[in-house]
Image (cartoon, rainbow, N blue to C red):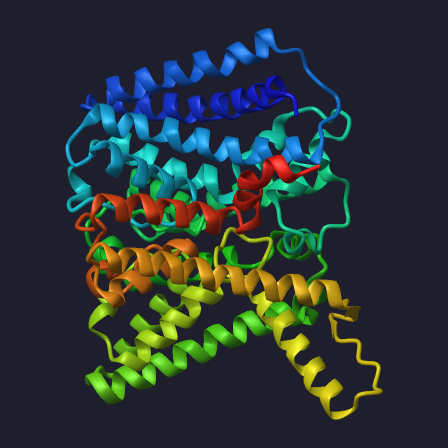
Length: 479
């Protein structure tokens, strides 16, 4: 492995962050707020450390798979480190641990926060906080590849290292074209969301920062009450629509934009995704009406928003779901674990894996009943081989094991069971809020310092889909 190659691409990632830090500093300068110097200093540091490797390290045309994985993971870690610096320099509630937690939560689009008062932050810092969501939403490396010229196998290796094999489905283009499609859909959805929020009466700053968080399925808000602050049904409807769309595979969205509407209707993964959301909303609404006395209109309004925001791993809130009946909370925990579609900005296990696991389960039942039968499960007329089923099962087991270990460690340091489990599941799935003391209207400020580092690692495991980070611990065994 060649360290200088790693440094070169880590430098490019730093330059990309420097661009948004500079934009955040400009907003601070325009608003004359207290974040100007922290953001400016951090932007200069990112620029300096980003440009040196480009000057002193010659470009390469080929990288190995091992180098590709290290570049991707180091890119995420480097971004989280530089992202924490403005928080530390600004001060307030941001100790070193809190700043790291907030930065990791931003870039991994988790949306969990240690802030007890978001609205006290200056505008420049609020914009940077939202920008970390938007940068991390589609993937830092994907953004870098979108603007880099094609060179050798680098793009292919980095793209495969950044994206799971599931997310590459529905892309039948060369790597460079696929990356550009992702970027175009992502930027297009963001602009459309901003315009829709402006039409609902939201000011430009709030529209941009919330659109950044929504399309990235992140959840950071500029308001203490999150989306409940706006008291607007039209605003909530816009958010529900764009969160739901952001949970769909971007390749499928691109196909629809090219006029291939039937791809949308025929896709079994999409049908399951929408059916699961609809069923979840119905179950929660009925439960809230019968057990909590909500009228039907209000029950469907809050159930629709909370199921979609949790089911797409966004994490906004219009109501405190921690006080809902246990049945409704369990439905939300299911969506916390499941997530939305692969190839979207959503976290979680992904509905694709849920379907593959279910197909594998049915295959095993059929083989038990008919030992000599040859069973080949299919999705969208494509056969699912045994290796895919086994890989999916292993992923789900490891995913749940990490949540269990994280929960176990949190309870060991004094966090109550419900908060530990739901917080771990929310951080692993990039959802943000859990239940108990880390509910949708609460925060993670009270979690002990070791717990915040545990949850930060959990977020990175979830964002890098387990194996990306695990492989870093096995570099010496990788031949």
